[in-house]
Length: 291
Image 1 (cartoon, one colour):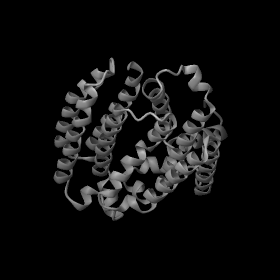
Image 2 (image 1 turned 90 degrees about the vertical axis):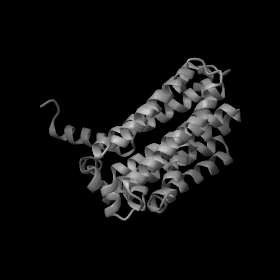
Image 3 (image 1 turned 120 degrees about the vertical axis):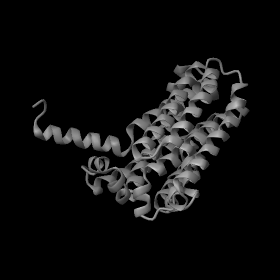
């Protein structure tokens, strides 16, 4: 045995917590915020200045912790659904007791608000609003028709508005990037609903595939992906250096996603599409460094 049994249990619990707070997503969020700040919002700032800027660091920490706490809240309200759709993931994330989940939820949000208050009272109010919005989404809005997807996509891009407000940079390109990201996240969120149709139907979630059928839902996803070409077209005309190739390649990539979407017939195929869009967002995040 590589580790004693006691250590194995502790390692499994750490993996459980990492999965619970979606550690990978939090890492990508932090990376995206730093790259966005350096290459888009404050290009004249050196990396040194960014890393030594305590107020900016506090905004990043507040964003990461509130988002992580949001995933814990989501996990609590989605537990019954996850037991049906993702039984292995459910077992992994419940190796740690519900009491620890609640403790972490309040601890992460409290620390986040302390860091936000260190920036300004307005930052404190912004993140308090963000925390309450996540809780409202997890407990009520997530079950509602259409509003759940729109609210989820907006919540995902809200941390980027936090750093936009911090640097007070409201250039046109920022809004095009936000629009492009919004449509991608919205499409991915609805694909996720196709993937979790069985659990949503059982737990009476009013998701698009439950209210409509898979074909109509695919039509809606197709329209959303096509709408993403509007900000994509405007971004292509911006002086974004090598990042322009990302927006050029997004056309054949999204065409492939659409084709795959219409060929998909089961949960595994929808999971692939979900992960493909997620991967493309990650590529876009890394691509910011090439502006």
